[in-house]
Image (cartoon, rainbow, N blue to C red; front, side, top):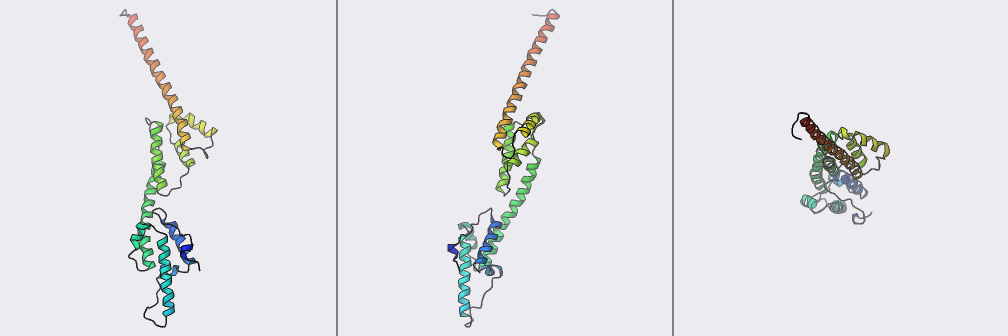
Length: 226
């Protein structure tokens, strides 16, 4: 039978308990020691007739604990250092890390709701809106969401202010959204936004000049100062 030290033992992190526990169950099963974790089966140590079986059992106990130790870091080891059986150690890890998973799921549900509700506000510039979107996207990914760029791109295009309708249609018709990076989309929208702002400034200046000209014409028609 292969020793645990010669096998690749999966490493437990704060984010992967569920996957780690499944992989460890398979590994410990292959080493013929999972039953110790599952049932905690023991043989009475006072039985002389079972001396050989007791010796084999002690060896199996050490094997399963050693394998678990290989799959955890120092912080997790401190949690189970006081455990006297592999069953007890396993339950401690399950309580500690499965609880973390539940908190992550609750957080993820909240972030998903925030993501779906995202909408660019009328006075909000593209860079500020992208900052809001990316912040929520990062939080979702940290909590286990496999969020592809195409989903983020599509969400942004659906949630922009109506003044971007023209460029949104142009992008959807001319670009392959499956391969478009979020940064590329932001660049295109910022360029379009600058054009809108420039035209708005030109119209404001033109209106100001027309108002000034109209005022002078009115003053002249009334015989006022030229």
